[in-house]
Length: 144
Length: 460
Image (cartoon, rainbow over all chains, first blue to last red; front, side, top):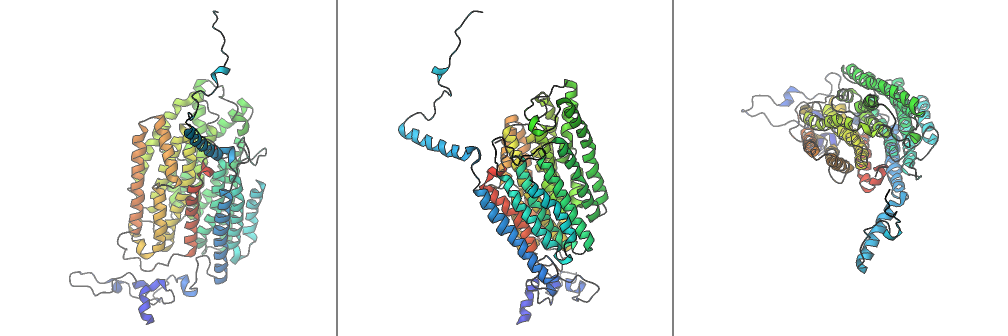
């Protein structure tokens, strides 16, 4: 039964029986295609020459950090904890709750509130003059 | 600021004194702690914008996102380099980490400098570790040429910048950004004004890069090892943008017409570099040209000197930093398995490494500026600002945006879809390290959707 699982090849690295033939058509070459199947060009043999041994052979739980399993495990823990739990989660919370610098968010909320209130009361939303025209003292027209 | 600088400096002895098998976890832990502290810079504490102020160093809403990005990138560079350096002897691994840390230190001091002299010195200092990374740890023979282009393009334009800064010091008596921002236009004769303007900005325009002086970038990015590509794309290009934004304060607005040729070059560059992307065979080269096309848009936005232009430039710089760095990590995962960057040789990855295809998709979508990511927001603000400057720019920016989306999708489809090549007969599955690396690039980008005020800068 385990042999059937070998079709998953690299997904179950313990069973590296035929990794090289995972993506190769296993069907016999038909008469229409003249080229031989790839299995004949690349015979399945782990022993041929020096080949890269997958680190998953020695350490099925290889995380990508180190060939030493203990260091690999700890490196993974450090990386994931510091990267995600500390930096993204705690850092993200810090950034979310930063104070409203320059009262910009307050200004936006206040503006929306005031607009709603004025529209309800029927008042103009904003006065068209920025300064009160009565308070502006203009020099009288004099001939110079 | 010292609480970041001293730990960064002491990461060098850490990398030399750590035991052999605990070298990488130790340096990773150390760099993540510094990243956590660096988030404090994003809190703007003063009305005058300058926080963590001392005579030499300060942060303001323009530099703090860039500083945080720099500090965020060091653990990511360490994560990315672990695999390909595992074969190297221990001393070389330690030297590599030392180079990364030196680069980090000079970048932090460059972004945080208040004196333009210190900024200039640190700007030049970043060249050295990057040059060593490219020429020593690059994988192809072309790395020597790449290093030469990288060094001399930047040096040729930054030496005039040094002279300009000295002249400025002579004229105004100060080079401190805190004072210069209050000075107003410098009295210079109009003929000298042109030279002054050009020499101040050319160094940064080459760094950004501007189309026309961008040739160093594809070479350097392609030949650099992964950490080199990441830091080049994510941070070093932004040094140019940041420098431009600072120098613009000083330059007289009488030199407004001088912007014209550079803005035209920039807009044309968007079109040209995006089109070149569609014809690339080397995956890293495609991403390098994509970097050029985004940064050239940033350059145009800074040159028009409107508040929206500067805001859009900063947002796009941060978003592009994260996206581009992720985009370099992705073909590196392919390269570590197949030792090839040729696109047609690495097709059909979705069938082989389906989880990595998820990251390819999200990163390509980020690169093509999918809403609501800050990539789009930055681009939109820049396009609107350019539209306000001149209606005709929409032709360039619109066509450029269209081609950007085209080549991003092209990159995704070429690498992920299509028939699996016959020669790839044994590929290791994607490791947790690679998934984490990409998560740490893309999650901050997604989180920035919810708090864009962090990267708005002071002009908004």
